[in-house]
Amino acid sequence: VTLSAPRDDEFTLLELADRLLNKGVVLTGEATISVAGVDLIYLGLNVVLTAVENLKSGSAAASDHPR
Amino acid sequence: VALREGELIAWASAADGGDLFAHHAVVERIFATTRACLPARFDTPITPELLHDRYADLFLALERVEGRAELAVTALWTSSPETRTSGTAYLRARAEMLATAKHVAQQLEDACDGDLAAAEHRELPSAAVALSSALLVERDTAAMIKQRLTLEAQDVRILVNGPWPPYTFAALGAAREE
Image (cartoon, rainbow over the protein chains, first blue to last red):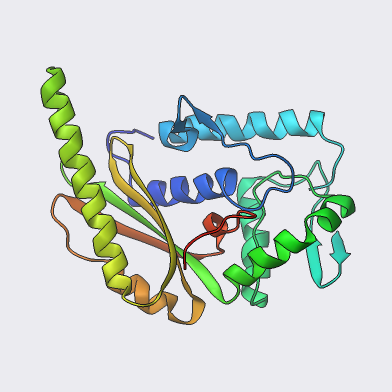
């Protein structure tokens, strides 16, 4: 993946991942995943996939609630 | 598991299962078979207590998205922005790009005509993207509107995705204009 010339399907993936991670109902506190006001999703696809992994491992360890 | 509270059902998976796009696949399946579906953010916890406490908010939010879907529009710059060294030139270019993005946002809303229930625009989210928009439209007309949105605009190319479950418009207690 290069940020200089991403294909259309990569933008589709970014838009979708942005919604899955930053939008939708949250019943506990709101937590937007962003760095210095920039939504993380737009920093690049690799960063996002890493962030998702972090999110999964972090929450699996921290949460006893079913999703 | 399905949690039930009054007229609401919350579908949840076990805490150690699923990934981002598996979550989306489940949401899409439920979305396809119900008129009112409120997608949850990925990896958000839910308990019967939370469902009970937020029942009224959830019900209102469900009513807002009932029968509706989200179209995702990405406006991509057709030429890569130059690297500018002077601060003044940078600010001027940035202002021009912002104006273009706002203009495209207006064009999108105009193209929806009276069929737009709500819209959220994000201008200049990244170097390659002029505008990222979420448009809440009636499901029945979403495909038709999607075709209308592929409009010709100067300096940008329009990419339309969806209809998707209304992720962007699912926030609780958000008093959006309709």
